[in-house]
Amino acid sequence: MLTLVLLVVLFALVFEFINGFHDTANSIATVVATKVLSPGQAVILAAAMNLLGAFWGTAVAKTISSGLVDTDVVHVSSQVLICALLGAIAWNLITWWRGLPSSSSHALIGGLCGAALSAAHNNWGALIWSKLGDGDWSTNKGLLWKVFLPMVTSPFFGFILGALILAILYAIIAGMFAAGGPLRRASRPRWVNAFFGKAQLASAAYMGFAHGSNDAQKTMGIIALAIFGAQATGVLDTLPGWLHFLHPDGGEKDIDTWIVATCALVMAAGTAAGGWRIIKTLGHKMVKLHPIDGFAAETASATILLTAAHFGMPVSTTHSISTSIMGVGFAKNPRALKITVIERIVWAWILTIPAAGGLAYVLFRIVEMLGWS
Image (cartoon, rainbow, N blue to C red; front, side):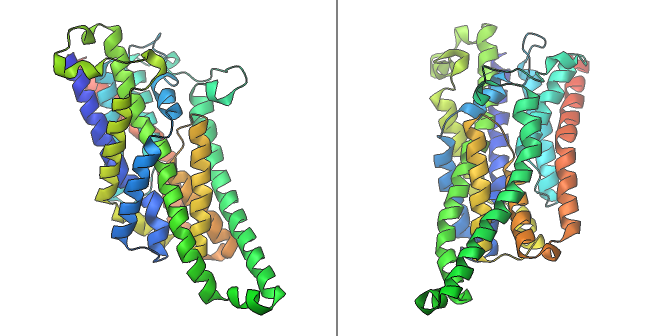
């Protein structure tokens, strides 16, 4: 059993590494597309900010570890978690190869739900659909509050906020032009591009921080779930000395520091590995971007991610930045959006949870047939 727990940790870190290079594009595509930074410089910035962001709270990790699967209905074994991770990893690699910016978050959630449902022999009660707290959003649990509602609303708000920020910036520039004198000179395209070229360094850093604060926590939750399960079954009672760090420090309400630090470092390493296929789709294929556009999209997306992380919602970085870019493109010129590319992205969104869940479901059935469950 201890070997299986360690395998969960290993596969979780593999997923975190893949999440890093798969979602690197989400945090740096715009700053690369606008030529404010070279791809290498952008990756370094994103990796550093991902690392810092990963230490910013654990609300999302707690959602994954205790808010989606009902452990009173299904035993979340190491085998369940391994199948969940393998399903998510497989879908991530498929979409990365195809250059589609699908959601690693939803792949992981889909994998976890699919494996748990398989282990519960199709008992849908194994999944927590809705569990209301005391009026505090952070205490509400279940797929409805933490997954489906944010899945629908975050892309909508990403689109609206991206368009709104760009519209406000254009209004400010128009006001400067109308004022005349030095302000008119400062409103010329050359000066606007120069200013937002520098401002986009801040928005790209903000985006990288927000990405780390939300995405890194999801794998923390999976590892914590494995550790809590191992503790409940007594697997951790006879650990060798060099593995004593696996004992949870604060029970099921806390995510241990070693989990946070390890996931943060692995995600940063994955980010440093890059993800150029998706960068090309996000940064070049949807709409032509200028520094002011990139600033608006990154600011909108990062704001949504940090807000969601505060409430423990594992939202998709991919969805928020993609729709923010769409909103910016719509504000510039609705006809500039490339609908065929957007359609491919939307289909990847729709398919992610059922596809990753289906893969994990089948994998667990194979594990059962082989007698490994």
